[in-house]
Amino acid sequence: MGEYKSMVEAPTGWLGSIPEHWECKKIGSLFSERKTKVSDADYPPLSVTKLGIVPQLANAAKSDSGDNRKLVCSGDFVINSRSDRKGSCGVSELAGSVSLINIVLTPRNSWDNKYVHYLMRSQSFSEEYYHYGRGIVADLWTTRYSEMKNILLPVPPHDEQEQIVRFLDWKVSGINKLINIKKKEIKKVTELKKTVVNEAVTRGLNPNVPMKDSGVEWLGDIPSHWKTYRCKYLFSERDERSIEGKEQHLSMSQKYGLVPDTILDERRMLSESYAGGKICYENDLVLNRLKAHLGVFSLAPQMGVISPDYTVLIPRIERIIPAYAEAVLKSQKCRRELRVRVKGVTEGFWRLYTDSFNTIVLPVPPVEEQKSIMDEIKLFEEKTANYISVILKEVEVLHELRNKLISDVVTGQIDVRDIEVPEFEFVDEIEDESDKDTDEENDNVDEEE
Picture 1 (spheres, rainbow, N blue to C red):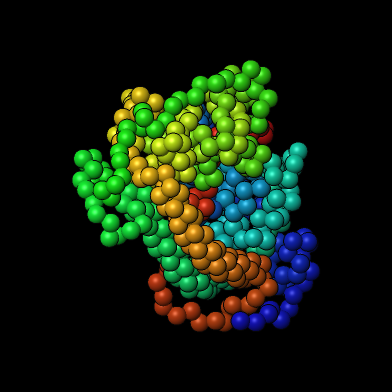
Picture 2 (cartoon, rainbow, N blue to C red; picture 1 turned 90 degrees about the horizontal axis):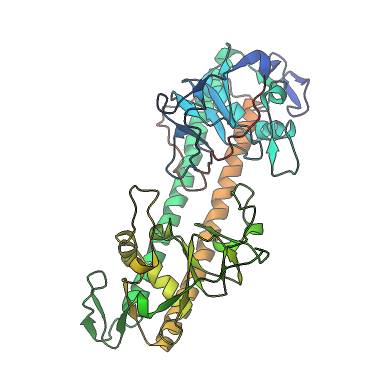
């Protein structure tokens, strides 16, 4: 790899200089905007993610605008108009429909679709796209097509675009292989942590202790000195209401647990008023009734006001300490007990009510042993968190290397025309939850005439 011999200053700052024989044109002259409205009943819903355009994800927030979506044809470029969501875009290989918050562009000519995919998902383009946006604050930023169409793009000759794609596919695939090795290691460590925690809270820390049949199918054998209780005898329900809703607002996050609204990102749909909301206190167990069977519950970190649809439970600390109660309920073994007790007509509307929750039988070691178990779990989780942190930093370095390589090649800072690309099998990066980041609740984007 080397530099192009003849470079000229580009007519736009984000490119710097480009090869002399490349052109530079506005998006508006290279693409046409597709604004056709369709129904997701006729055109399968798609999600716009950091992985590109994919069939709608299960965790995508569904809106009520199923009959008011944008058509996407195979080969269209789709990008989220919320330009603070950097990298949520791509050329779609699928036909379907997307939320109105997205901009759909159809390439006119002189484009290799894969080159467009690399160019407009590059970090350097994402920054320029964000630069053309506007908003009240930096993390609530929108770039509309009327602004986007004025962005200048580099346009290499078509055969050069094809060589750039071949080269990048080869190099990106190699980097992806390294990333995947590290992601598999993270997954392995995460599964080990689940196993260790699961065994500790259901069988204790001493593998040589005498065991007995718990009489509970999901538990099996437990240490002979442990007891079992239905949740009815381990928790009491709290139904205290806020008068004005001025207490600290707390929201449930599957990733972070129950936390103050201020530390969640701006995408969450927060209630305008918490008057009449439920009050919880530190170490109360708070369940999101709709998602408790998925493990979406947490100990309250402080006193606050929460959704009236949450359940607030007070652990009876003379029998069970709050941290142990949360851990055993979140254990892999106990998950099935939560799932089989939900009630509702269809999935997505299932709720775990207190009466059903109260029938779950939990293992209950002596209180001092519960504390010892949680101390050991905390130490183990700290060790695994540190180990995973090291691997994540290595993944971050590889991502930065890949992003810089793509940006340098698609903007003409590196000449790859004469590089011979060997035969190879392309490898995608393994998906994880952060890659699948998507939402569709913000369909109230102003449509431009």
